[in-house]
Image (spheres, rainbow, N blue to C red):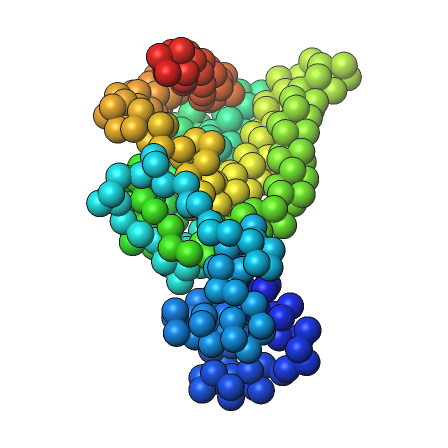
Length: 330
């Protein structure tokens, strides 16, 4: 139980309102409300006063896992360097709020990137089957304009969101320590979001699998090329929605892992990323360049998107191999 919950529990146990407790502590009711909402923490003098009012020890209040009259806490900090930055409770709450606010924008931008070739695919298929009377140059021009506009909007969203994350840019790769109350607050938020994250991931993965169904359905009932092209466009639309859901929930869930320095943001993986950071950036830039070059040269936008799948699988395999080597080295 974190400090915020203990203050609520003990205040109610002795029958005090927030106003009455605030009066005893010589603070405002808003201060007590913030303590109980895990938006801020009382200073050490107020902690001592709270312990006296509640009839408990300061150890009990300060230790997340403590029960009344138990021993001193042991903080796990062996992995952290002594000169590491200390992240306050206010900073942690601000970081979570920013991630929750701008995660949908980043996810929407990714979806727009996936949708960007839809116009070229549709117009090209309809023009080739004489469904619409338009020249190849017009198809290429209109399709390219649509593609560039979609990517431009996506890039604008990425830049805007990235600027908001600027203050906390180093949390992803730098080692840090957390002030008292941060770990407990983040763990509670992560636990409360876990079921939602699982549901969103399930929906996103199911949509990814179902996105190929329109093509198979079309193959069963028709051989017309323009129908197949329309189904490819529908595939991209469904896939874009699926990736939107996955990216949005992953960004929110990752914000908790970043603060707790768990999973992909553990100390060991941060140190690994420092070594491989430049190589990873070059790799993904090369993939982006290859995707657009091949797509424009071949015009096979309905096929070249597979580059992203292959690149992601390859990057995942490399990461697994590297992690296994690190574990063996330990």
